[in-house]
Image 1 (cartoon, one colour):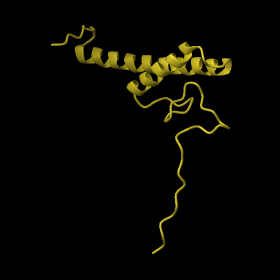
Image 2 (tube, rainbow, N blue to C red):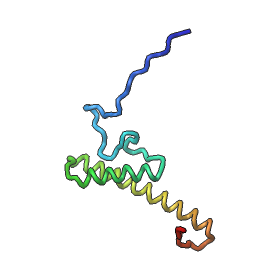
Image 3 (cartoon, rainbow, N blue to C red):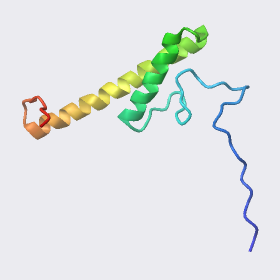
Image 4 (spheres, one colour):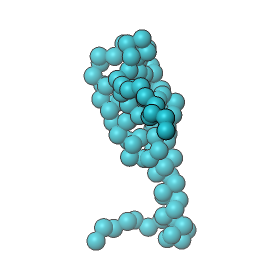
Length: 100
């Protein structure tokens, strides 16, 4: 039986040679959309905080703004899809959701 292959350890930190984009979280690269609404919202909230801090260089500010627009569009499309599903469940009239 052959010995187990050695695997290289990878760091979650970006390398100094390739800094992460302003909007990219550890598991999401710029351009890729998160799998869930909640993950997109979490990334968007963090991104807004970084943008509002005023500490980003201009190029990262622009990249962050573009990423934020992508995330916002993703969140809106998910919310629209849920609203459509609710309309289907309730008929053609969208009724307000009342918590009991």
